Image 1 (cartoon, each protein chain N blue to C red):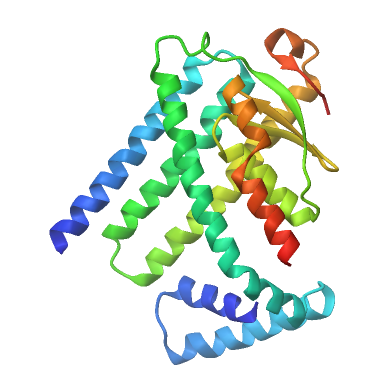
Image 2 (cartoon, rainbow over the protein chains, first blue to last red):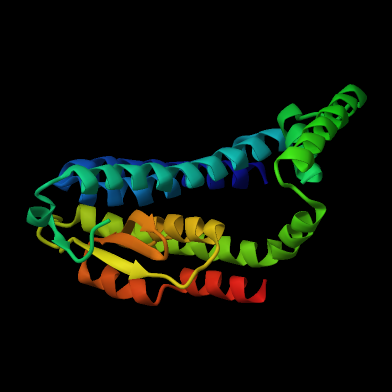
Length: 107
Length: 156
């Protein structure tokens, strides 16, 4: 049981770190803000969830587990909103948006 | 709601002793009293919320599944040879049938977390979406999460 906990926790944390690594790499590989945001929006939320689940396996008390659950909920609510704001500012302030992508409708 | 607040209080304290419970009950009572009085909470709304919990749980499970799919898609894209050549970014105006304000927020956040799409802005019932390629653009019109939200609304 102890062994299972350590293995499951480690696998989840390593997977989460891998996704974080890919997300960071992705930020540098794409060239335009709106494409970069895609990587940040998706990979970060899953990576945080995986790492928190991994930490849950290592934590001793139920209180720590509940707090980690709150961390996940907070990040899943805050992350899309933050990315959404970055997009909004970019779309509203960039005058040459059509050079970067097709625009079907504009707020 | 007061039950939820009390659970949060206990979760932050990590131990259940008499003093924690007494202080907790007093604090929760004060906060609930204030919110019921001035912030529009009501027992009717609480009952509605409890009734919605199963549907919300199904929704969250589906959302986690979609996020995993989105991540596989994104990782494959980032690790491919030339990610910039493979995408055709496009900003689309997507009309939604979801009516309530809260569900629209949920929809906007879900679109951001589903494969290949990021919400730029919400104006009334139009959601402006940045889709990273044609495939994501096509997937937008039959989004399973949006259908689930519409169903929840119809049953409410």
